[in-house]
Length: 451
Image (cartoon, rainbow, N blue to C red; front, top):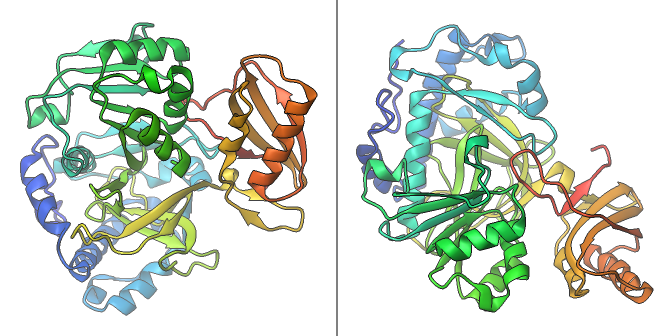
């Protein structure tokens, strides 16, 4: 079988730095009628499925039907039925059977293979290989996001994020350009970054000193900087905050606009599969369908419609190094309506979080916690994390700037009950700090209950 899959035609195995033809192609497919994009996905997956059945031991197992999808590409209903007959791949399964998901051989054009690791944000860290085509698409979609947001490459780009150990100096690092992939296509201004694990005051000094036009960071860091610096402490040049890795709530967007006068861009991605959904200039999250097939599914496996929330299941259409087919990534998202920007790519209205960020009431009902920021109306609360320890109990871990009295504790208890909409038993626990995950992610709500 050839090493050149059929769709999109501008995504060719080989040089993972040849971005220009891919970007030109992406600008066309993003505005094609959706049925043409879906037909292209079917053709690509039929090719992929035939290849993995021959090359990847996991997909030759008896639970995977030995179906030939190529004759069904032009029959959407039959193809979808056959596709949905394939079992979901859980994160725990990927971790346990990682070796069985490695192909026996790989076409030369798809080499070399690199390795990426996840942080285990649902408690299950995994490792996957990335072939050259997957890297090419990751880079192209990264540049696409800059272009959609109409960023000026001559300006300064800052970041507070996870950095390798050698780059974790207390004063951060400054480079002469934005680096790859932007530098493969454009001349750019300088970039600066500081490690997310350093103290917040060090991060604030770096950002105010570097004074970026665009800042990439986590929502929890953006909120903490707002609290620390206040409206007057905004870096003067800052125009936009680009948020990643954690759910973005309306309260944070409103605060960034009101207190700092900056816009917000959201990026939904995962190390295993790259960019999942990017925000257009209208603020709408569009699925990156040229790279991934994204399903939002009810508990019974049926697809969700607009306004409905379900689990996110992803098929990577191009990564042959570790083929992920119907991969249950552990997230939940809400399906959105088509966007008026003219791009036809499917829309996610909201990324709701992960299974362990889901709250439960004693009668078994589950819901996504919102409006948890109300506890910060007690001025001494610098940071808070809500942990469900029992069906009727919530532990609120708080980092305080000064001691609080009993009246303030009662305010925190009532604010928590009001935000969660249930009369939980609430315990306030003072802690010196709230730990982040291995790559700096912070979970505002965490459930310790078994799903």
